[in-house]
Length: 309
Image 1 (spheres, rainbow, N blue to C red):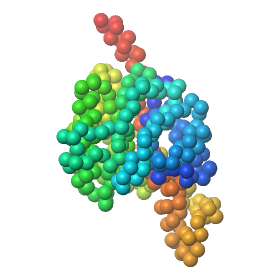
Image 2: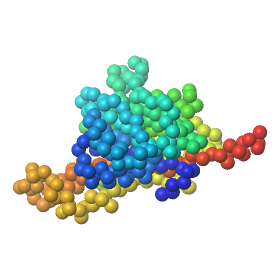
Image 3: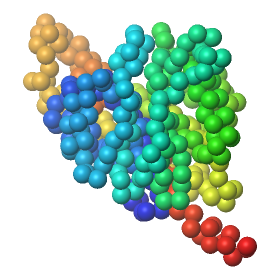
């Protein structure tokens, strides 16, 4: 991954129920992963901020964060969202807020978002953008859920209208809780003005490598010559941490840390399932960090325009 000042590496990750519930070793792993990206949108931050505070203490002193209030109610689960960014490369443009729908745009005519989308204005190099992270309603299954679909339509329509009114670029990263890569949810995003590059669509973000829960969508208002992302020239991916840490072969290393109720009287197959699907996902995550390389230096185009004029 290139660290050139011409690019930033935008990442979105759902850190499963991230509160004061990680071992010190796990926090160091999370910090190492996050330190490679800038900015990072994080979902499922707990109302208890001690875990986030510990994580921030492991990152560069130049790294900062902006966090929402917790969303109350059974659907919100007391969850927060956050942006982590490095001040040397990303400038916070003094605008931040949680998105609340007007009465006439309420979901199903009566509901706000289950978890409030969080919008923050940033600038990196020449690129000014509003970053809005979401954790869309899940429901009872990863199939078609009407409320989930309505939330996706609502946030895409709301931000597309803002983008047009303000002539401002919006980027929409987060956990959309959509298992498949296409379908009605993807069509809703595109119909309401957002696009997802094919190279991002190719990367599943679950540990099994089959589900596309996480997305990064764009509604850009830029000069045609100012290409933030090129399918042929720039990169994206989903970082599979299980190839490096908490691998299937590491069960014996971490078995002593498992609660007794998850080992005593259990078959080896049951213990292995607990290790793979529960313990390591609550220590790191059940989602993979999804990232994309974005160009932020348009100085050549600016100089060309000056010469043309």
